[in-house]
Amino acid sequence: MFLNNLHHELMVFRRDRWALLVIVLFFGLTFFALRNGEHMVAERQHAIDTELNRMDSLDAAMAAYITAIEENRA
Image (cartoon, rainbow, N blue to C red; front, top):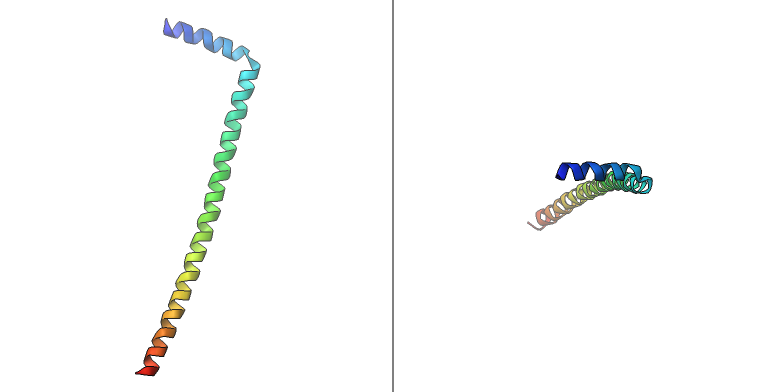
């Protein structure tokens, strides 16, 4: 009985062009949003990695500066 009802609902659904259009539009927009989100996450991760590298180099320079100051005191 369930399969019979499902078959008839699918037939009605296939004939309804507006519902089909809405579903295609929904999946298209969902795909676009996922793709766009993946691109934005990659850009943000690149910016984070760049900033971490910059901070590491600044930390190393500051550590060398502090070491130089400590050596001149001793």
